[in-house]
Image (cartoon, rainbow, N blue to C red; front, side):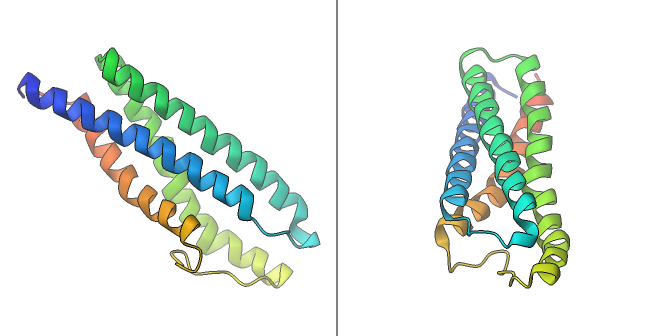
Length: 154
């Protein structure tokens, strides 16, 4: 690949990483502001989930911002490896585990607490659905760009 194409790919990659960080932070903030009071049967789980999901979301966001900045200003194979390795748990947490939670864990909790479950991409709350949709689009793009930077041909 030519240096111009690698530079463009590096800039796109950094932009995706920054956009992912913003969407993750926004999504988590909206969740914290709008999460309903939980049923007493699952209150411990709900409070623990708020804390753990916040640590994950804001932690991943900080790591994504750092990787994006370093990718822009100090590009190296090491940062491409770190960024690609960071995208794997981000993809797991915000795609695979989220789908597992929605379609396996929540139905079990719903049955115990008699709480209805909304559709996964329900647009009745666009402030929470649009970021989720963006994550499902941006994460695969980020994985592809990080992999392409990592395995670039010179």
